[in-house]
Structures are given as structure tokens and as C-alpha cells.
Length: 191
Image 1 (spheres, rainbow, N blue to C red):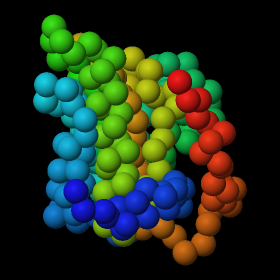
Image 2 (cartoon, helix red, strand yellow):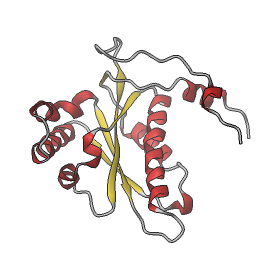
Image 3 (cartoon, rainbow, N blue to C red):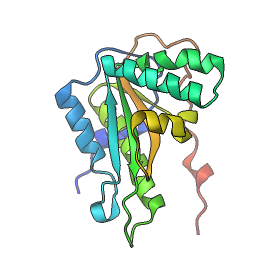
Image 4 (cartoon, helix red, strand yellow):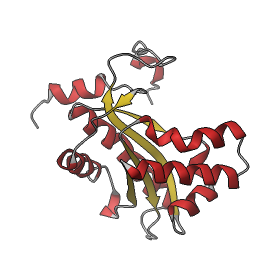
């Protein structure tokens, strides 16, 4: 294999972008991002995931679904009021759904890990294309009310929403600053 310093730089410079504006990826760029997601480690090539895409009016529909789920789930009034606007924090939102595909050699947890990897692959692909992204989760990941709103079936679980767009020139109030790189050795135990 040939060394790829640009690929390593992409990983080393990864960070979440909380303030995202238009433009988002166009159709060709989105296809490239999805192709990258389809390359994640996936034992037996089960493709145990699917993607929910929202942009334009789809952001309104997703926000309304979140608001209805928040009401049905007994969430705080503050969250219920915020829910319709939440998807509008970026021009594109990609919901990633883990889809369990029964298989005698591949347990459900391994399949869910593959779906989780697609979120990271999508984020890195967005960064490689010049966009910013942030992976959001929260109570929605486990909310049966939102699962019903989004038409998720038996054996399907949300693993994240990836918000994608162009990073704004100024950080949003309260946006975290890049953290210093820790020493890798602090996280290693040799066996």
C-alpha cells in the first residue's frame, strides 16, 4: 500500500462543527459520501443500516416528527418548543438507522457497530469534500415515539443524526474550541 499523508491529515484534523450553514453537499457529493459509508467494516457484507435524508422541506418534516415524538414521550416543554427547529441547524441531516439482519455468524451488536461506523465515514467524507459536520444523538436515539414517526421497523435502531453543511466563519456562541491532542500512550495498555 502507498502511504497517504492527506488521509492521515483528514483523521488528525477531524472536529465537530456546531455552526453549519448552506450550502450543503450537492447530489454528486452526497452520493460520494454515501459510497464512503458503504465501505465500512461489515462482516459478511450484510449492509445492516439505512439512511434517512432530510434537506429543504424534509428538515421541516423531521422537526415536526421530533416535536410530535417529544410530546408523546412526555419531554420537557422546552424540548418540545425547540424540536421543530432542531434539524434546521444544518442544510442536510442524515439519520443513520441500524437494521438487524438475522445471521448465524454475525451478532446484532456487530451489525450495530457497522452502522455506527457509517456515521463516522459520512463525517470524514463530508470533511474531505470541504464540509463540516456534527454527530448528534440524545434522547431521540432510544425514543419509540420517534421510531414510529420515522417509520422504523422491528429490529431497527437510530444510531445518530449527522448534521452536514458549510462551517460558518464565526464560531457559534458556546461552540467548543478544539481540544489539545492527548498523548496516545495515556490510553494504551500493552498486553
